[in-house]
Image: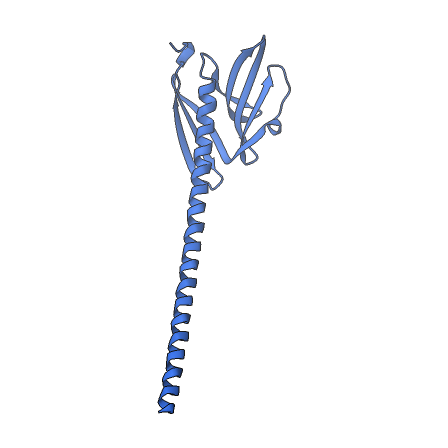
Length: 166
């Protein structure tokens, strides 16, 4: 009788250890799967954040300067750039938005100041930026993000061809 109980106890112990090992393996597997999914989710969210940030910045700066004759597409030191012009206390102020050295940059200067592309503030990682006035009241900004994905942004201007908004 003792022998049967001893054998039964060994089987019970082995079953409990085996059950614990299966539970531990499943728990580790679940943690690994969740960690992988978390990594994928954060990468997608980061990419979306960069895209939204670039779009929001470009829209906002265009709308800030959406006054008659203020927005133009010009060449700045050999690079295609958005130029925003405004008069402040008798001075003509130019703000340039362009792509240089892997970033969308912004540079503000007084009319007669000598500035270069590397003087601008690096804002958003990008490989290229090509602004284009499609129509009198429509601005198209094409840019390529740091991953090489081309994006197009269309912005309707409130003050086309020198007319003030009503």
